[in-house]
Length: 403
Picture 1 (cartoon, rainbow, N blue to C red):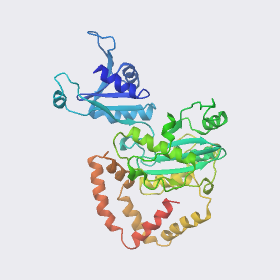
Picture 2: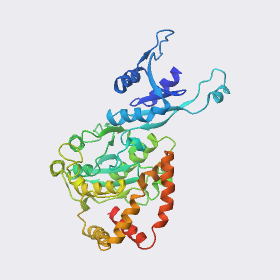
Picture 3: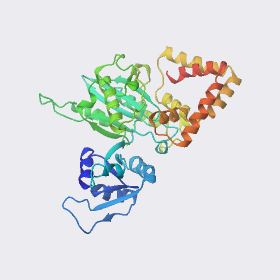
Picture 4: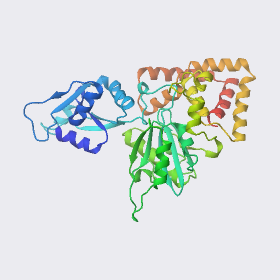
């Protein structure tokens, strides 16, 4: 089993490896010492029959406690966790030989930007995974929320980069590994690297990926997610950033068809540039203390669903400058403003739908609890209520969401 563990650990050297042993998850070696310190777990040391390569230190917890412990590692300590499960039963393993080991494979890599688990997410906040690529004086930026399926991409300049990153406030960002090309030149110029360091928030985890992750994919996996991707005309840096997101989703969600929409391209010129100092000083989304309380967002947020709160925060972070899109959004707002009864009825019905966006996403990727199944069943019934004027109102509301 030691050899099996070391083989899996070698495949994911930058992750703490959770290794299933029967009804428990175990950490071994260096990971065990680190986990014991971070999670306050008892560290066990073997004292007999030690082998040269034996991992004689371990700590662990029951399978049912995995969510709470992984949440602490990922959300509070900024650690990546690779979950290695037993993928066959002991009886199946014995069919291959009396001393055959149960096969174990990494089934999920949990990182701050790849979360879909409800217990690790804040209902009113998006959890964005971003990707950034620099080429020929342009920045390609893409960001996705795996818990909702939202996927957006844009091209930015040096002057607008900080504002573009501020717009999505990613929990994790993918960057190409710094390498030297055939001519001995550094792939990313020093001035671009310096700008990047200044633009990224300290709380954002930086994950470096091989250059192949940023290469265009001729045959993207899970084609239903990427439908329409090739039909869009994206600049090379933007296409590279989009490809890195898709590659990382496949890397973290092993064998799961995580449903991500085709990326929605947005023009950076359509949105107001807000630098980080102005953002903090105006206390738009958070007060100077770092909490939502006493911020502008907290003062104006009268939404009835978590999805509505997330959408309002996104609009506040990126004010529109495009007159046509502004008028489209105002038309939808005016429609409700002029029909008070319809407004109140629609708000009441939306309140009963809970977090429809994330519930449907968890169902689509198989990360679902009994409570989520119940909510989706109730949602299916309530959708039949949205007929006539209410249905028309919801169609107009989509104009608000996608402008």
